[in-house]
Amino acid sequence: MELSPRFLIRQSTIHDLLKEYLGRPFSKDFDCWVFIKEIWGRLGYSFTEDFPFGGIVDDSCFVYFEDWDRVSVGDRLDVLLLKKKKRYHCGLMLNMSSFVHCRYPVGVAIDSLTETWKPFVVGFYRLKNGRIRTNN
Image (cartoon, rainbow, N blue to C red):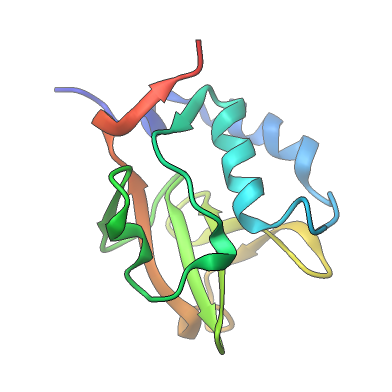
C-alpha cells in the first residue's frame, strides 16, 4: 500500500515550517495560493500544472487540473477552497478542524474551521499520489 506524501511528512516538520511563516504579511506577491505552493515546495514537492489562483472562475476549478482529487473531508495538508461573495480563497488544512492561510490584512494565520468559515467552504482538495513529483 502506497502512502500519500502528506502522511510521509512528520507533523513536527510542518510545525517548524509554519513557525517561519506565521505572521508573514499578505502582499500582491504573497497571497493564499503562493503560500500553499511555497509550503509544498519547502516540503519537497511541486505541482505538474499551475494556474493563477485569482483567475479561478467556477467552483469546480480543481477538477480541471490533474494534480487534485476532491475529498469529502479535509485533513492534513489538503487544500481548503473557500468562496466569499465572488472571491476565492484557499488554505492548508492542519487537521480536520483547523487550517493555515494567508489573507489580507492579517497575513499568515491559523484559524479553526468553525461557523465563521464553514458557510464559505467550496471543497477540500488533495494532491494525487501519481501527480506529485519530488524537487530533486
